[in-house]
Length: 273
Image (cartoon, rainbow, N blue to C red; front, side, top):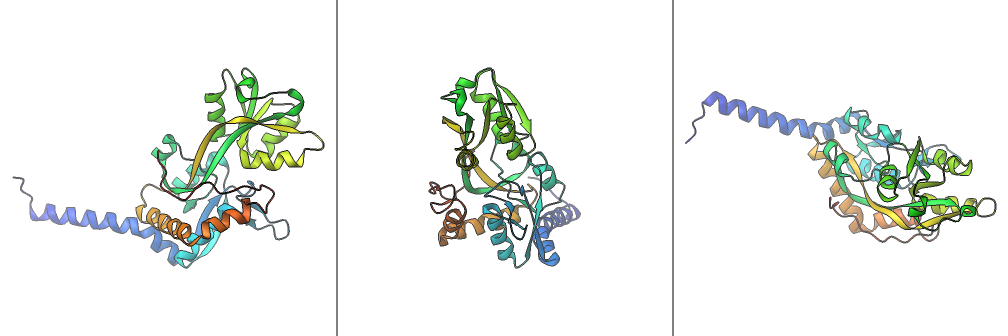
């Protein structure tokens, strides 16, 4: 039987209380501050991109950030982050949460906590139609461009033998590399490729190759030390799924009445790593 002195028990109790308070502090701090700082890309239409008239950042990711801010009774502050800087910005406390095209990977899950999956992305390869490629493995030994620090880059290396990946800071730069002949193919979200394909159909057509490289659930990123925030995020997501708000946001930005014409084939649920 283990014996504990009263001071030891008191110290243990105080430590447990302090830990609990520390976990609760972020929500309290956000409410006291009156703003939720949500990190997002700001250059990834239709997830987060500037409104052509107001220049304010809008999109699918931003609407989920707004719902979280509303649940806390605070204003939303959107902060643009670069793809490679997403996790450092969160870890260093410069943003409260991340809604930034953040695909789950085992490596990222070691660094931060992921909410339930609120979007599922298919990553595919596109090539210039004139080059005649039919499937991703046709690009063996070729150059494939992707966003620096993205899972698309890793996915291309894994799925295409002897591929050389070249990376750029954002998706528009990736697409420009294909157009300028600096890459033989590009690995990006199917959603983005569908839009680009329509835009260049008459001038420099591209083909989206099958099968996809991989499918990827996206989660909202939270610091591992903040379980209360993670629970808040998941509670909001669950409520949005049950009320139909999550489906309405999908239809608004990605649905059949949009440029993308997609149907929602997933539900918000825990990410199965």
